[in-house]
Image (cartoon, rainbow, N blue to C red; front, side, top):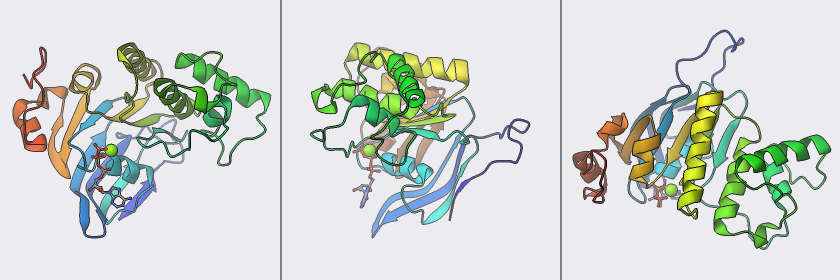
Length: 254
Ligand SMILES: Nc1ncnc2c1ncn2[C@@H]1O[C@H](COP(=O)(O)OP(=O)(O)OP(=O)(O)O)[C@@H](O)[C@H]1O
Ligand SMILES: [Mg+2]
């Protein structure tokens, strides 16, 4: 029953073998067992895609890793989180009518309070993150004026502001059009290759999991299959979803 950040005193010399290690995780909400005896390991610099049907505990897994829900059994260990963890949540709880600007929202990635006064240095960092997600010049825009896809990119920019070693994304492509989706996956690929960022992403997109992820976890409350994207087979998907997924031109689930 642990939820801990494990960092050695001298991290620069001792690189842990894992970035995220989940062992025997069980999470209950009252009598509802959302996750049962689940295991996951993400090595530094890997990209893990988590797939499973609605209600199968994917978001709960991410929240358990982030320490946002209580763990009933098992453990979660973070081995590479010294610069904080970037998080793009599935549910955006902020009321879109709240008169907030893009620069304020992205700044909340660094501040624990709403940043009404944003110093120049932070403003510059925000600008760099917005540029990375293709939202150059959006600083002063109101969130209420953004499209769903633009808002999603604002959340992505917010997750980048600490230069995190680990980014956790819950269905990040929701609301993005095909080219926005491609841009986002390319950006994540770039972060991984250039900065060695570890990526843990929940997705319903088999194609993205197959072509971008280095590892996959197919789950339904507990592990169904984990390994390389080659384990996205018809059989494993059927075990998780009750059917074999979609017809698709390229992939082992064909
Ligand atoms: N805060 C909560 N309180 C009570 N039950 C919860 C809570 N969060 C999740 N659950 C329940 O836990 C189970 C798993 O939910 P979770 O959100 O993790 O599923 P998911 O795999 O992310 O689904 P989706 O694909 O729809 O996003 C569901 O039965 C859900 O109703
Ligand atoms: Mg979810």
